[in-house]
Length: 249
Image 1 (cartoon, rainbow, N blue to C red):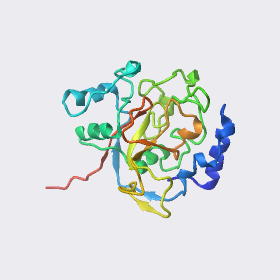
Image 2 (image 1 turned 30 degrees about the vertical axis):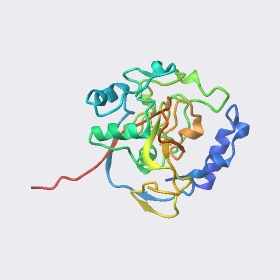
Image 3 (image 1 turned 135 degrees about the vertical axis):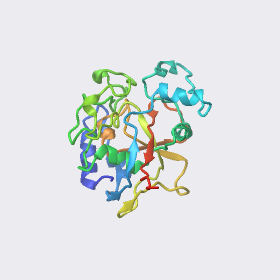
């Protein structure tokens, strides 16, 4: 999990190829340090981001708050789009409604990397045709992938992981369970979870990059963060559930 110093240099090189690449430096990616081994218990993860249609079922059951589509945001109210404009707590409540939870940051990275440590969910080389991405420029959108903003979930089957996960990079970035800290602890970890109290603040980790993200932020190790109370058009989520082995009666 995380990046080595050499991998961060490689990310900076990729970043400098963007329209505003002159602004790129190692500080953009330093929160990925240090690279460290992680062991995880078995878990399940949604194949795609949670859709607007799926989230509506929770609203209908009065377990979730309706999505607030204001100030022109009605264009995101499409049944097979990722459910966005939701706070971290909205996402957490929906997953609980399903008897699930948000994935941890480590679980999300494991899904992206696989056991081989892939640089991107689909492999080690960037491919602009297999995700709904953006660019680092005055205009963040990049319509060369076919979409200026959100796309229906699963629109890029060529970007799926060998395990079958879709849209882990691009489309909507995704809330995960952890509080954000700028960096990791040294050494091996088992089932890690971000700090539950100060010095961590109210920011939560966001993973996967979005339709606004250039290639360096679609990498398996890339991290970002947002205030837990934010409602953003480019942040959605998916749910996870721990594997519990059934006991024989």
